[in-house]
Image (tube, rainbow, N blue to C red; front, side, top):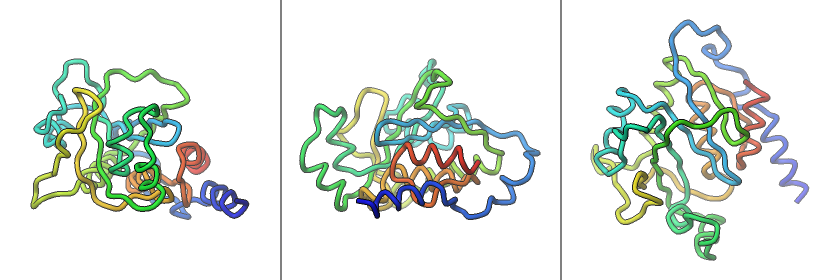
Length: 214
């Protein structure tokens, strides 16, 4: 247990990458975008502005049933996670042994796409990050690349959603508890030019590392 605690502490305070990139070290000279990091007890999502550009970039989500043109929608939300746990545990009251077992061992992964209206800020579960234009492009490229594809087409997971506005898709990568949803979020943010901790398996450690290193 002490080794695990040490790993979590070092994973938070040791930055990754070790040195900030040129883009993050320099003053911003281009118009950028603001994104949100949404944190729950064990999971993080990334919210990007829902506008004409992002509707076009992720139009496949709309084709699969995500109402990107909803008049009250302001944010497009992405999360990556274990297939069994994500699909079979919409609420904690529906927690089952098998999804937990698969999350602690190995599982296939899925992407979850949702929309949201105005999100109240500030609040402890929401962190706002400003990105330069190139950084935002890198983030969108990483997110798009996280979807598994059959040729050029994404692969919706049929018959699963938490509500009318969200959809699941097959994803790239294998999920386990040590390298799960929060390490995916951390990697996405690093692709956008931010520094995270070396290893961030929990929303709390990811949030702390972002405050420490950026």
